[in-house]
Image (cartoon, rainbow, N blue to C red; front, side):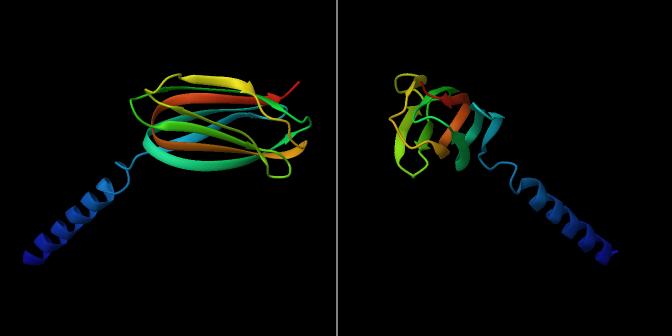
Length: 136
């Protein structure tokens, strides 16, 4: 009987450790909704942070960009665009609760080809979206 009690106790402790492990960790993610001529996506978070980079082919020297958030009082959403030579042509950040909740514009001129799109979410709690298309 004593061995059965110890075995059940060990199982209960094990289940408790597994159940409490990572479910409570802050979460943040990027979901791409289009990755062709246009490059679009959604961002969501529950207080988490991340940095993700993607390659996107831009046949022109500039891009039009839009980004917006609906977020809690803290956290930020940063969009960084680098041209085919790695030069940063746009670096925009929206901080929740500090000014505007959307940004749009045209990047600086860069070299056409494979561009790098980097999304950085910091302590992000809420949701948002972004879209990038070849400039005029």
